[in-house]
Length: 157
Image 1 (cartoon, rainbow, N blue to C red):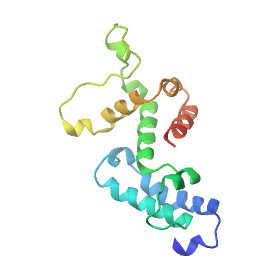
Image 2: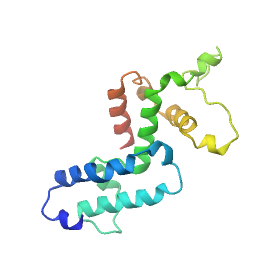
Image 3: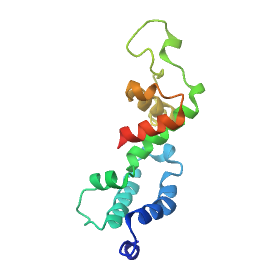
Image 4: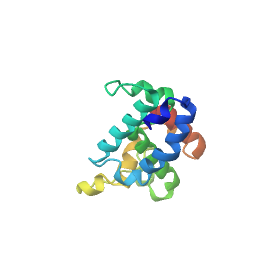
């Protein structure tokens, strides 16, 4: 990748990133994204971004991700979880389906209480948790997948 940086412009490097590294990084991300090993993949992603932009290894990547409009691994994990939630909406219950009391969380998804850590770190539990943290204007667009995805990406940037 270091040899490719000099002759190419940023758009070409971005295409190379999305064709080689991004699919490998995001494959099965909702299953391994919150594991301790994901930190190594995130460091590798930051290293690739720094090489693409010709920065030193000590430079911050926050602005680089913004300039390239690439989501960092943790944000990509959140996006993958939320898209899973939208595509499988019928598997989840809303709080007002469980009880008829008009509370502040009556439009949030119902999160069953569990004690097993394995389940708490799983896709269903984390997906509900992340979805419930979204602002209302994003949750309101959950019926339109394309608009929902665009709003979440903008929110995560």
